[in-house]
Image (cartoon, rainbow, N blue to C red; front, side, top):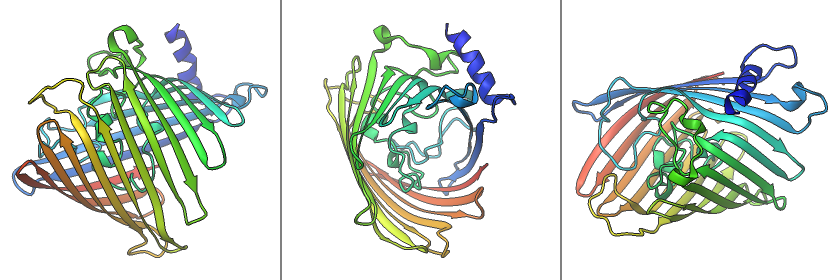
Length: 353
């Protein structure tokens, strides 16, 4: 049944058909890394995305759309330049030639939407553009969730039902139900389509978010996750994002986020260790060197309390758009794990169409 469903969907979204021309996008990120010593690395991420409205297939089939995204990650060296716990780079992943990141159908009602298919958590959660400025993985998905559960985090995905509801103009609720483990496509070519709750369990996440534009723009969100089989059963998180000043040339603001995950059994010296609590805060300034907001400068600090060690991180970064499609981003990371302090320099190039 799954193969019969996938074949026409992929064909419609990626072939030149007479019914409609789908939206299509490509993004390529290449990044050079060094510890300012003897270690260095080169990592790459390629994304291919497409969307096809249901009205393109039949004019009476309204408010629906097919979504697809393929990703590929590559790095010539297996070792990272430092063995940190929070991951200094959010694209330093194992090699995956091509993996289905998103593939499914979404239907939109007046205030409610529902998606079914293969999906990744980063499509719906922790997606604020100013948090995305930072390259440290912890600035995105909260580590108390990302590091403790075998979930659909880059570069892997899993079968998912995702729903969103606009409760009011400012209040938004979303919830997702995933297969409990996102399997590696290098081990199982059909990994994204595995739905085995008996062995993998079920992973659920729900979030309530309030947004406002009366005092500049800002939002706050509270979320909870639950895994039915993992020993780290539940985690909670919260985020606050707020602009402090904005005009047509400049913008500055901050965000804070935190998470907690209970430990259901006492396990010492496991690796990777369980992340019990996390706190992170970031500040950004758009238009520091260009009056058209073509550049963004930011500083990000985070501290994670693991089961037997703590890690502190500091990131200083600057992102500059040469054009709408080309950007460059250097970043400096200072990482202190226990009593060991190290630094990492990154130089990232981004191209998109």
